[in-house]
Image 1: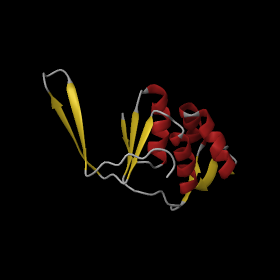
Image 2: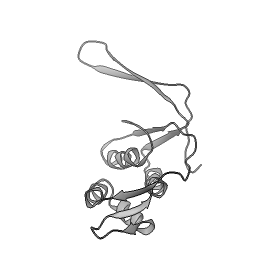
Image 3: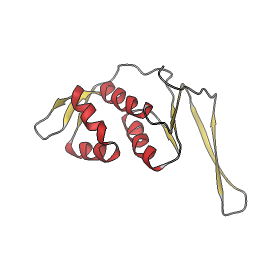
Length: 131
């Protein structure tokens, strides 16, 4: 499975997919993760979704966020991203590629039944561990 984009949604998707798939490839166009962005509000439904995807995710976010009266959280966007990124880096079956510009996906069918997918990037760089 390929996830394109290492923002909060892409990272949350990787956490869930890492439980279901043998290998998950995460591709991010930025080479480095910067502390940018606005404040981010997570409503109770977001809490439920994150707890389903990765039980530890919400408890980690509670450490850096401000609780709201409706049992949600307010936190900087980059804090959410970094917290989820740390959890994704702990998943042995997720491979992270940064500084990769997504170009195209081309679907072909050799025999009319089986579909192959070719993903094209301008370059490939494999990063393992912390950067």
